Image (cartoon, rainbow, N blue to C red; front, side):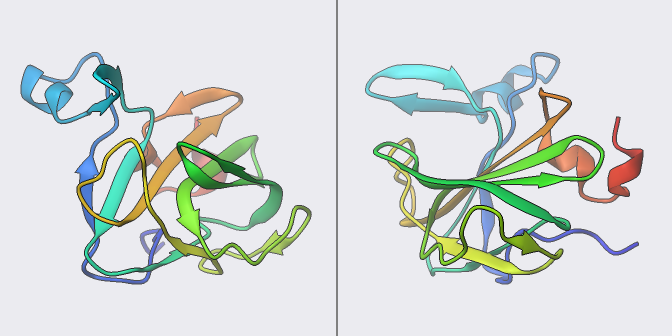
Amino acid sequence: MTQRRLFTSESVTISKYYYHSKDDNERQTKSLIKYQNIYMPNTGILYSSDEQFNVVAISDGTITSVKEDEILGYIVEIEHQNNLVSIYQSVSNVTLEEGTVVKQGDVIATSGPNSLENEKDNCLHFEVYKDGTLLNPESIYNIEIENIK
């Protein structure tokens, strides 16, 4: 299996990692988000770039929600097989609607601004849930969806 991708650009980097309580102090510090002088653990991974980039579906699924949030920007939620849900936050140029079936690699949006972290103007904050439980997104990139536990 090839590694799943979330974007089509090679210039995208990780700005904030997923916060895990078992990580060392340095990694935990790099996984905190500051907003209005409040620090909170990052519940996903924040990707960013100096240039706008296409955001693609991590796996086949159905778009279950498209909404706009004043802090997080546009949010797209996709339900996949095996009770897996992927959430794409801080995106722009969303042209797909709720109920749209997408295939792995389909463009669903472009990167957008993020009010939580302003390192770069082009961001994607990505979260993954399995059976309603938050997962580290990095844990699913190289395995088949049906094998995610």
